[in-house]
Image (cartoon, rainbow, N blue to C red; front, side):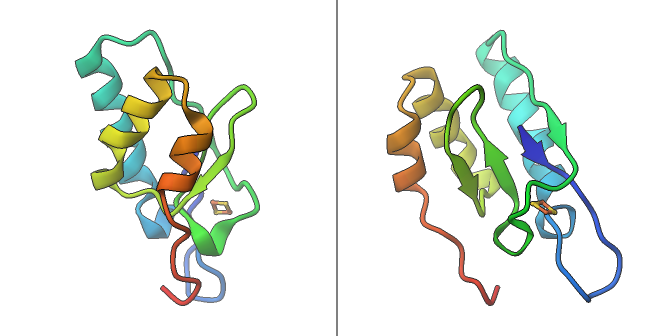
Length: 98
Ligand code: FES
């Protein structure tokens, strides 16, 4: 599940303003390239807006914040290996002030 919520203005940031749509597009492309039978469920706010783009590996995986396109191969590798905890610790939390 990946957040693509977009808020206009600068009062409160959002995943859509922090690369959420680009992340989803790249993730979907990676899934197709690997021939995986997975889907990306788009969410509209997961409550971690200032740390986004936010993703959660379903059904019971951790939240992963600040995912960038350059992280997606690692995300797919670790997800294929069912190493959700390793994935969560491999991706550092983004800077709160970014
Ligand atoms: S806008 Fe993505 S978690 Fe809130």
